[in-house]
Length: 472
Image (cartoon, rainbow, N blue to C red):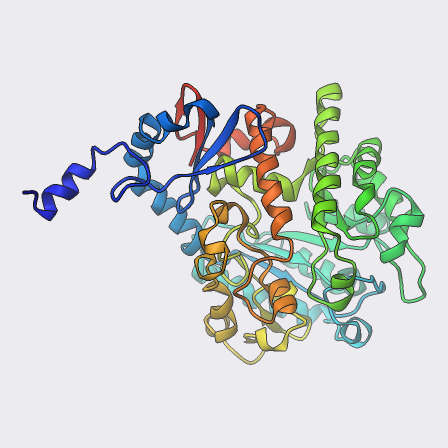
């Protein structure tokens, strides 16, 4: 008769899945005629397996290969989910905006009447953040400050003063609607190596200006496209397209438009439903998937014909998270998300939130930089509620095989839609199909067309075996 110790020792040699000692492997249909994905959900380990070789895969080298590295993979996933420290801040130098976009996640009264920091106030905040990061991050780490909004260039003097004073301490980024991005501003930002992101929602003024417009209902398509042409060759430049019911069918045309204008990195971000305007403009999930994948197909066609990439960064992050979970660059597609644990947001008044998406929710204000210690704010109840949001507690996400490729984002959006953090995303079925599409890209060997240059060096290849492609 075996003792418990002998039974545990014997289990190391078991090569069968879905037994008491073997790994729990699930088969995921990814829409291929000849292959399926086999996934160990807790570690995000996967393999693409021939459909007629599933039984062999669940009782052979694939299982053994996972067992050999199971502890390492579990440790890696635990570090990704629970071991990271904040290293970035979304800093709003002003609450105000010169635009009144239909879907904005910030309340209209804040954007119309909110506070704007002076140069002295902004530099004082940056000084506080510099001290905090010096005390919490390794010496070689250079944290990020992303000037966000509302419209940060309404506080241009303050923003440029902060960049000038702290460029040796922080990496800076700026997200702007481009209305105030003149030649002098572009020259200054390039000189200081600042990342620049602008927004455009359509390939024509008629479409783009439907939802992105100023308080007088006038759009900015011509100004945005002029700025885009000036910045197309700048390596730290990207364009965000917010995908709504008003423009979802134009996504394939947006790929044409961006290629024609030399843009290399974009985001096709489904509109967040944190405010009523966003909820009203949410696209249907099936329609979103259809046109989103058509757009991705076009990026492949252009790459194959011209060698020129158009990286759709939000999809690239999902693809990278499958190829190797720790190689992802954005932290929305994991649970807990990056809010409050990899980054946090600071409003113009100094209020601190887990993420910019929460700025419209007073109950998620952790404190104020001018009144409280930042370390204390980051362990406050609002922050704890977000950083302890685990997908395992969410129904039905806790049993979902792709839970660590999705993460049920975004908690602020989920809270606004369902009244609780512990609910699936309103985009659940779209995210599910996006993961399937990513597996099809991998099966076709087309990753290079969709991922940023150098991604292979960032991704550890875990296991290769005949008849299966695998990753950790």
